[in-house]
Amino acid sequence: MTTPLHLFNSLTRQMEQFRPVHAHEARVYTCGPTVYNYPHIGNMRAYVFADLLGRTLSWKAYKLTHVINITDVGHLTDDADAGEDKLEKAAAAAKQSIWDVAAHYTQAYWADVAALNIRAPAHWSIATDYVPAMIEFAQTIAAKHCYELDGGLYFDVSTVADYGRLARAKTDEGEGRIEAVAGKRNAADFAIWRKTPPGERRAMEWDSPWGKGAPGWHLECSVMSGQLLGFPFDIHTGGIDHREIHHPNEIAQNQAFCGSDHSGAKLWMHNNFLVERSGKMSKSSGEFLRLQLLTDKGFSPVAYRLMCLQAHYRSELEFSWDGLEAALTRLKRIVMGVAQVKAQAHEDSGELPEAPAKGWTLDSAHGEVGGALLPLLVQFDEAISDDLNSPLALTVFEDVLGMKRLDPAHKLQALAAMDAVLGLGVLTIDRQALRLAPMGAAISEAEIEATLARRKVARAAKDFATSDALRDDLAAKGVEVMDGDPLAWEWKL
Ligand code: AMP
Ligand code: ZN
Image 1 (cartoon, rainbow, N blue to C red):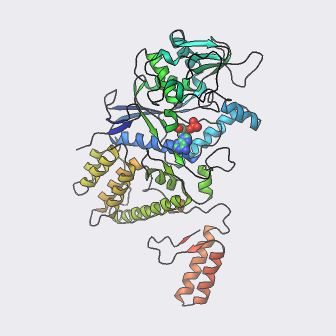
Image 2: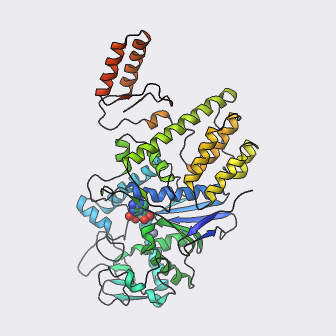
Image 3: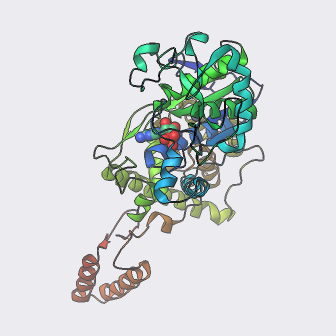
């Protein structure tokens, strides 16, 4: 009954059936944030995607081990080999230690993760915890695959088969924009260890066989994924920009380390970008598009999650405030619909459905809800098994919501099961969470409710002059009164 899971592999540019390396398990590595600044909502799209993948693997009954790393060293201002270390630069600008900067932005990232209902992975691996392991890894591959220059230890990409096949780039052309480093054998060669220049002291540096210095950025992901998941593991994810430099370089290191042509992971998956035309996503633009900005403007973070799920992860998604508003309206409609089902179901039991011990899967959901809902659960499973077709899965969720003459308790179970994959949290989300007051709002919710209560009394007494005056008063404070709103939302700011 269950549809086999098919995923798009960036390595082969083809859809492939997921066949786990270890029976009944799924091991996934996701390139995490570089914690030199707040993540923008585009960055967060990458983790919503990885979370959807993880939830889907759980739904397909695989025991999931997910790793997301935190990059607190090594990522230069250019993804290739040029520029300054992003963290050193940010710390110098803020006159703080790197450790404080990293700790602050890691916490901020985790807050966004939680707000977006992204499940915590089995491991958050912190790059600086793995520097000794990185040195060991580099030592293992150095003799056969690396050479030393004044600047550091470089990886010679001509020593592995088919370098750059993930990017589909010709070794020399694709990397043409990299600043020339004297002595590099191939344009695409990259530093796996960056030496501290003589006479300098860097804010972050370690002793190594190649002198004091710091690891190159690509090294950390090879080391942490190999250590925590074992080579080869199942799936490696990241944003589509990583398909060009970071992941080809990781693959080259993995090939060198494993002494074979396998890339370290069987499947490489990449989410497309969230784009925004006015440039607000750039972290250098002052007030950039971070999740907090959305909340400040009165949008629940879950509306942004829904906005992400409305697009397939491999499609570009254009951000606009109108689009976010539309997602919020859709979310409100879903939440109100679920509330009605809950109210009907509670007359019988009064409790929310509990997930089965092994979690929601097609089989466990079917066991709970019986025959009438099965065709829709199967449709949902088909959608999500087709390279995570979340836009389609969402419409199936809404179809269930709209079905009449069903046992409400069963309906609620089915919704809970599907939401375990979608992660909207719509069974528990509270109405207030969807009606955040924008920052700087001139009126509090309590005042609005009190004014509306007075207006109700006036209307009941057919005192329309007072009723209209109260409404105008609210309008002047930015509150729109929505008489007769079919969703009973009544007002919005
Ligand atoms: P970084 O913190 O710069 O290493 O990026 C974190 C993640 O966000 C990586 O997987 C990037 O590929 C991804 N990413 C960066 N910009 C965007 C964007 N506009 N839309 C979606 N993903 C992005
Ligand atoms: Zn990475």
